[in-house]
Length: 528
Image 1 (cartoon, rainbow, N blue to C red):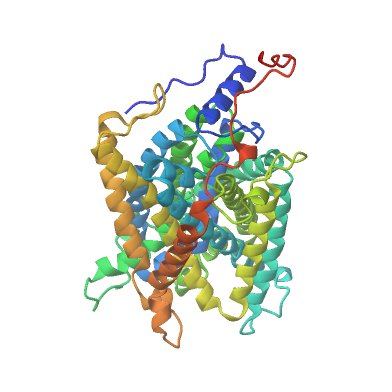
Image 2: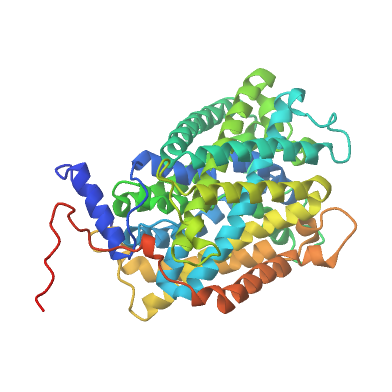
């Protein structure tokens, strides 16, 4: 396995930008998005999408509920599997540093039809994910202060759901405005938020470590008797609990999706992908571990209801605990920014290839803000509409949210499977002089595909506790993953096959053409 030695400091920045634009031109696209992002910006985009503080605080209760404290082992398991996927993505990011990474990678690996399906699945999932992350405000803000419970007092049947929609809508509107005003503003806010998140995460680890009351041998082997009486025993319970980790560790491809707005993305994007995933795993592993070692009562019922928020407040006290919860609010905010930013670039990339309705409008880059404004607004509006479902149908919303994450795993498979086929046929060639897996490429790619398929099946398995947690029981909720994904995939692809594929092709205004020096006089007409 090899990586590049980094950018040459003797190469002027404007020369490097020209090389980046030339590389984009080789893919058939005219440079339109302004290159303003550096190494930390791209790293921040990837790590804020994963958003360890958001994910761990949102899903800790789920893991403990179904797997007990021993669910912690699902964290390294998921990391190893996702690392195999990320390594494949690093090779692709080095060779195709272009906006809408998953769509373009699937297109180059599997052809236009696979590319469209991968992009469609990822785009649909991203809009649902945006809403799901925005709902996390409700899990944290009311615990900081009752003042944030604007709808009722929280005891009513729909108080929490309605308040979650209100808080989430405000957050999505903020994110839409920031993303529409340009990538530089988004990157500055995102980078500042990630810096705060990282500092808070490290501080949280230190504070929790100072309150340890037990050793890992007792905490990480405690199953709370879960799984007894089931066909697969604790293994079945562990597979369910592992969803808490699988729901967090994805989105690292965002570091590459901003490739057309980054300096030297062919070299920097692979590093950003790996750094984001490894940093997220390391920080998350210690937060979860020390939370289990520090909580006063490892069997407290509140672990399955109040989650990590309960652990922090109970262990560190309300004053210090609330400071960390504010850091979680910051993490949720920048996570929404990153999710929407990734969705905008994906929609722009597909529209630029005329692979979406009204492609000309969706792919238009604002001359003032130098960003695709229409996709930002459209994704924001759809995100708010999806949020509204949560008011009276929170169970259906939770099903849709789970399904959206499965769709992202499936979209990843639509990249890694065609890539594996290219390797087996000897057709895959990494970018020369940049990130390469070398002789490890084939085994890593095989593991990435097997992992992606196995985890997708685990995520989609029709468990009542996941897809129909409260009564009444409905078969269509239990099988919601297969039904919803089937409808989205087949319905969307039918539209593409019968309508959009006949129009596909880079729009004229976005097509790369050899630059002409405007000071050069036109050639005289040929003699008759």
